Image 1 (cartoon, rainbow, N blue to C red):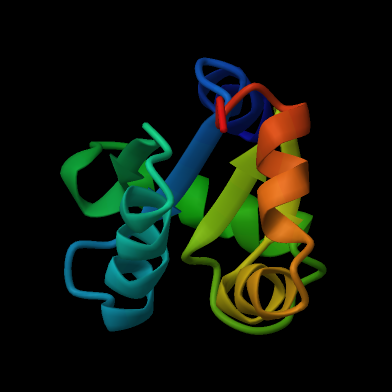
Image 2: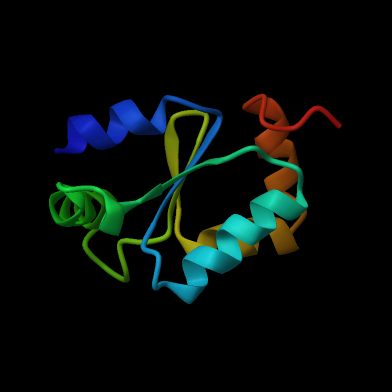
Amino acid sequence: MADRVMKLASERAVVVFTLSSCCMCHTVTKLMQDLSVNALVHELDSDPRGKEMERALLKMLGGRGPAVPAVFIGGKLVGGTNRIMSLHLGGELVPILKNAGALWL
């Protein structure tokens, strides 16, 4: 299942795995929208194999914390809400997005 996650994660410069009922997922996807990033949002609860993918994401994240949101930038797992918000508040997120080709500014 990790192979499927990685295949989906490489489809666009930014891919966010979410659950429709997750408020932190909404926060991260809204941040990407506000930064004018055209992220691919993959809602696991809309995928027949979503539970398996969620378990694979949890393993990829080290088995701690929630599996979603899981943000991939440039095909690499960056992390969840805490990591993305820390990067954003530290001024490091935009350069990472630019390097991945997700931002043109």
